[in-house]
Length: 270
Image (cartoon, rainbow, N blue to C red; front, side):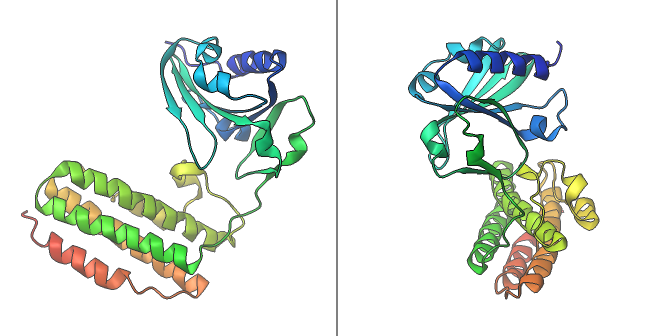
């Protein structure tokens, strides 16, 4: 099976969008816009249209671009609806938004390319500059959510119940990634926005973080899961110290919560 020819498919999408009067603006984001895509990369395409109903309720329009395997229809109530279309040889993520969404402008956190602009609306788009440091409340929430998940994960480890272990581990890893991103903000003066979802972490995170992250995952065994949780906590706390010191915040959570997790994990049988 040959991988998706991104340029050919994108040319097909642009030709279709150009010919369809409903579609007014087409923007490409993600790895293709950055220029670092590979054979396994998605195509991230945003469509700004006069009428969204037909594109969101029908599927014939995206079937023209390849052999569809499965489609994920996400309504994204806080953003815009998307259709994640998995083809035999690749994947395209289509965002479908009304043109009125551009009325107050749209800010992009990463690179973007405007490939169709029928009404000169590209001026409504602008790149985000840097990233804002977290508020004291945002930092407190990150700490609370990390340790709530860590405590529950520790209990599941002691019970040797691997499914909730992995579920809780995924929750705390989201907060760990957030702290890694904030640590990057501290080191760059908040001038750079890390890639989405931890992508290419080894290229932008601090070297000590990249080295430590490798020990933060485990298989299904209780002992290795306990070790991975301890390592995750050690890394999280180290980063928290760096971030709070830089921002002048106080941390009233990690020390006592870490002690509690370690107390629970002491019951894991070797």
